[in-house]
Image (cartoon, rainbow, N blue to C red; front, side, top):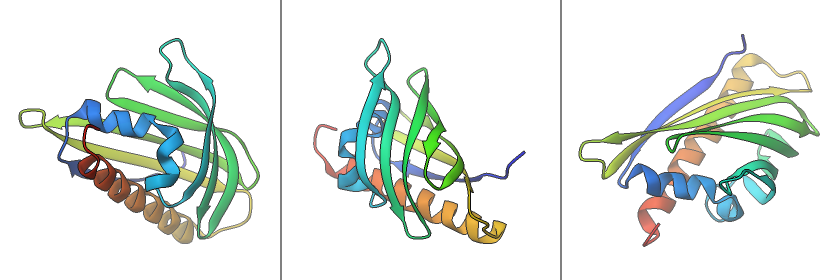
Length: 149
């Protein structure tokens, strides 16, 4: 089984507000840093993204890829790689858990990346950690600074 990297952060907002930002792919270039373009290619019956094309520039990892998303209730979303120029696999998830009275949310982000080019495991995990840390920090800033999110 591939090794994964994970990290968590607490956001001062209800889980539904956090998931609203996570599900709004069109706005990813505004807050993620690494995602330069995002396009929803397919939606499920509830209007949630099922396939999304993303153009990513994360330093060591630059790619144009498509991900398939699976939504589990209102507190978890996971994804797997459909196609990519440089990645063999890209599996991840966001898991949301209410904290206290539910006006705060603990967000856990898990990520496993496998590139087509040879890369030392240590370097790959470092890249995963950078992606996760930037994504969580960007998500926190976006949710907490945008009124009505």
